[in-house]
Image 1: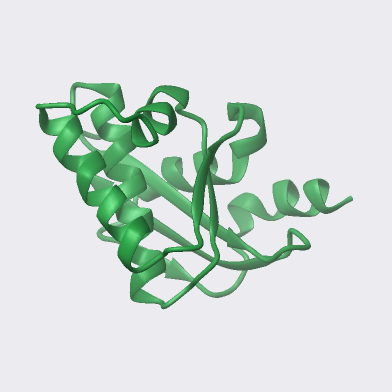
Image 2 (image 1 turned 45 degrees about the vertical axis):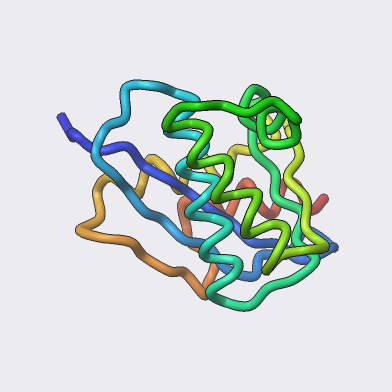
Length: 141
């Protein structure tokens, strides 16, 4: 049994066509919201690293999305991570947004996350990974 938590990220264009994907893993985090927020932060850092702008990020953790846009101050690890996310969104990805989608609509990211734990380190995909080919093609219909 793997002692890792996988993170899957998939970039698509406005037509839903595959652009790139990334998998990462991290040591287990006991709090689900912190793990989801860390995944968001890593995705934002990746978007910033490859110099994307006007990005609509989708994630299936409503609590994290709501907390990200909340005016409430969280004095916790979650609050620190969300603060880092807000900083990136307000400085580097100014025309980008994070929105909630249901898990069923986020299948590509979940499959990539499952694959991530079997890889030695992070992996960038410039070609459509076989593990999500059917998902991408079905969603483009």
